[in-house]
Image (cartoon, rainbow, N blue to C red; front, top):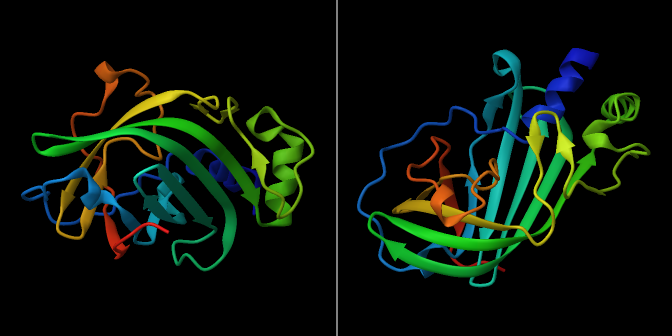
Length: 203
């Protein structure tokens, strides 16, 4: 992997919204507990000219919300390069019109590098402002700046919105954006990335 490609890995890990399309959100299923379960995106292109791939898995329960973003070297999603993990504690969930509102407190955020060339790049360029990266060793990125994205500190409250239609879920920010740090900044529209339910209840 070239340096330019490796550079894209760091930014893409935090902005892997992708262009996955699905049917428009329909009538919302009533009750915030309808969000509980495991949700997975399709393999979606990311990075410059869509040359990398990503799959994001969400796990939402009554007390926790978690995301695992797996990045791949190619759009075939078969050569893993980096895994990002992000979790928070749910402090409130309620129905509001066509969406479900979630308030959560950031608990953990980490990157695990899965290729030696990515490790080399992160150590040369102080990826996320850190040195000493190792292959396969998770590293906390709480409070760090990774590329153009500022990772929230542990304990930061974030205010999310979710749109649910059958077994399709769209989020307003989680786990991509963390600028929603006040109730006034809560997302008012869903992102295009679609998650599909793979388990009805969160483990």
